[in-house]
View 1 (spheres, rainbow, N blue to C red):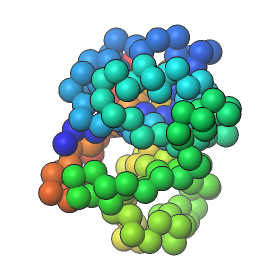
View 2: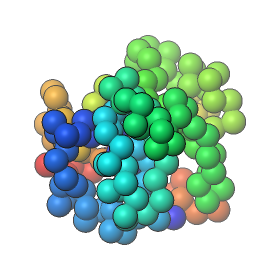
View 3: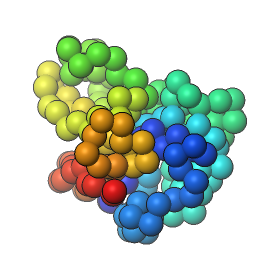
Length: 163
């Protein structure tokens, strides 16, 4: 299973429509995760044209994103891999221990909010932030995440530049 992970797209200010470099990855997706701050629900509909979307609400998401079906947190099974998702994982210090306590059954916790790409394992859990494809802030590039999952195993997780 190929999973594309997005966060902090900040439409319509930053995401007018799906950037071509992002769309190229979405065309090969079996599932899409959005870790919040989509800002407007039509972006989730746009993403759903590529593959099934699971999203959580971020601090900039309004009632339309909640009405679309994005809760504050979600736990799901991706080809046997136990994945949790939340927008804001809190401060960097103690993050893996905090995420392990919050999602004790998760193999992988996906989050956003900081716009800082991160792939880190600690305290028995892997945490993954794809960064932002459209609002890179102090990062050198806009980024997304790609996950390859099979039979409950995360075969590959990488953060790729899209700008």
